Image 1 (tube, rainbow, N blue to C red):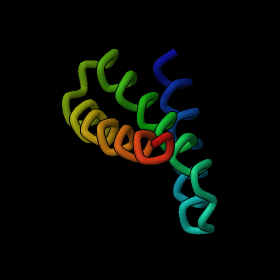
Image 2 (cartoon, helix red, strand yellow):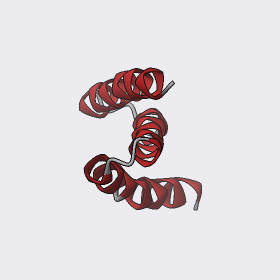
Image 3 (cartoon, rainbow, N blue to C red):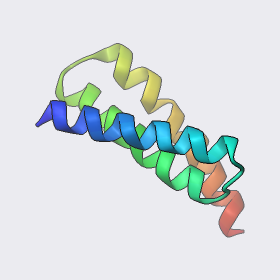
Length: 71
């Protein structure tokens, strides 16, 4: 199950990066944010603190984007 989450999250993160480069806002923050949440979950489930920290710290940054979008 963790491998599936990692692969799906990787695809979402890469699509999010592509959408950012193509300037597809706000779709990019939803797609990339979903991938970051998936990687955070995978890091938590596998007790991988490096992955958990890296992607876990991205979540507040995406929250800032969501807040700015909906204000």
